[in-house]
Image (tube, rainbow, N blue to C red; front, side, top):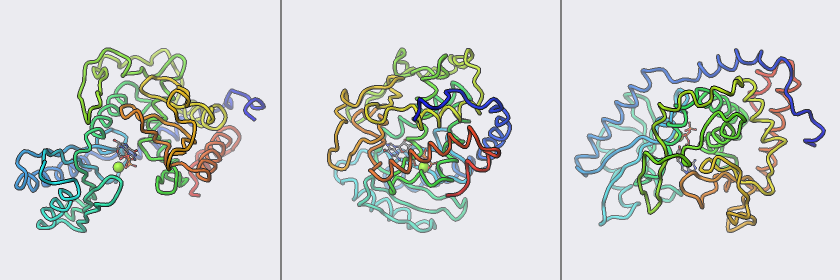
Length: 335
Ligand code: GTP
Ligand code: MG
């Protein structure tokens, strides 16, 4: 099918720059929201330190990776060296500590894949998930935030793609579609693969930042202020990039054999990763390598029926951007 199509987008694609940028602007969280998040974090730190003076709290996920839209929940990681208790015990204890304050709906979810405490702060009206010792997530949060500093088009593209995915119902991991984290990695990869490239591959550059977490060595170039004009030779606009993103996932990606890899800034083969067949619940129908946890495929949640949904949505989006007379409305139409 892809051969039948023109590889170029419609001539007036740039008329979409204004509406796309307006949408992006409207999704940016206002400063007071950031302040409220800080306020809640400070309260949590105070409560936690009474029980565990040496413990630390880190923000991760969209509230800290710069890909958060307004009114998002916050993700917090409790870093604690506690040998006497296992993770679920810590979670239960943490929930007890927080319940004693006037936080609302404090719930300990000890049996989730990632055990968390959920809560809502009535003062700031912010909801929050707290996990324990999930430091890889804190590190990949920094990686995403650093990539966002390199070229403004990444944040614009990712906001638009996340907004599209939420509108179309394909940002639901429990239904077999992809997480926000996966979509942001797809955007980074896409911009690394443009020619000229819009983003570098930070993990292939000189290591200026390095930590070891759960025996995984995480290192990359993090002096991103030095890379601010990296993408200057590529003049593609946001409208061209949104179109190109959907066109790539609709008609160009080799689902049978390719793994996208932000770590290498390239495509690698499923054979190389031994992701060619189903193992347990991991079907590897769309493969997105985690930048640090190399055995982790962010596409593992996708199954036989949801891969079809996803691919149809990519095609729908590409076709709307190509042919529709009012693409901006159609693209984000609730499903
Ligand atoms: P929104 O909450 O949808 O705005 O996005 P988010 O950036 O918070 O993403 P999400 O809730 O999907 O993930 C939160 C964080 O968990 C990510 O930013 C990663 O740091 C970390 N993470 C690591 N592995 C995974 C994974 O397999 N799935 C998900 N969802 N998150 C992961
Ligand atoms: Mg989140």
